[in-house]
Image (tube, rainbow, N blue to C red; front, side, top):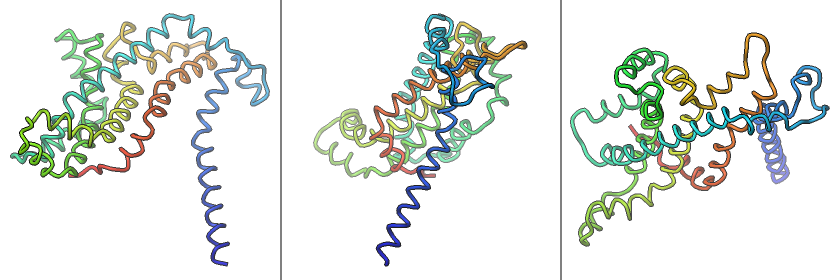
Length: 274
C-alpha cells in the first residue's frame, strides 16, 4: 500500500512537471509557429495553415538584420569577456582579503545590477556624447558591465570562499608562484561557476534593450532593438518579427546545450555569500 502510494505521488509529480514545462515553453512554441505563417494567417488560423519559410529567407537576404545579429554577438561577447577578465580577480580579492569597506563596496557593485536602467541612462548619454563613446561597440560593451560584472563577481566570490586557503598555501610551500596557483589550481575548481555566471551574463547582455536603444544608432544596433523595425504605424509584420525573435534565441540555446553539465553544477553550487 505504501509502495503504491509513493508510486502514485511520483506519477502525479512527474505529470505536474510535464504540464508546467509545457506551460513555460508554450510562448516559444507559439513564436516559432507564427514565424512560419504569412501575416494574413496570424489572426485567421491557429494550428492548421500553409507553412512558409519566406520570413526566414527575408532575414537571411536582408543584410540589415544580419548586421544587427553580428552587432549583438560583438557587444554581448565583448561584455562577458571583459567582465570575466575583471571579475575573476575581483571575486578572488573579495573572498580572500579583508579590507575596510569591503562589504559596502561589494554591495554597491551588486546594487548596479538591480538599479533601474532608465535612472542612469540620461547622465550616461551625456557622458558618452562628451567622451565620444556614443554609437560605438566599446561604449555598449562598457555600459553592459553594469549588468554582467556584478553577477560574475558575486557568484565567483562564493566559489572562492568555498575553496580552502590551505590548498593555496600548500602549493606555495611547494614553490609554485601565485599566478601559477591561481591559473592551474583555483581556476579549474571554479570552472562550473565561471561557466554558469558567464552564460547568464551573456543572456542578460544579449537581451538588453534599453542601453542599445538609447546609446547607439543603427551602426551598433542589436537584434533586440532591430526587431522594432518590423513595427510601423500602418502595420506589424508579425511573421518576420517572430522569425527575427526566433533566430535571436539560437545563440543562447546553443550555448546552454553545449555547457549544460557545467551550467547545472554551477547553478547548484557556490551559493552567494554576504
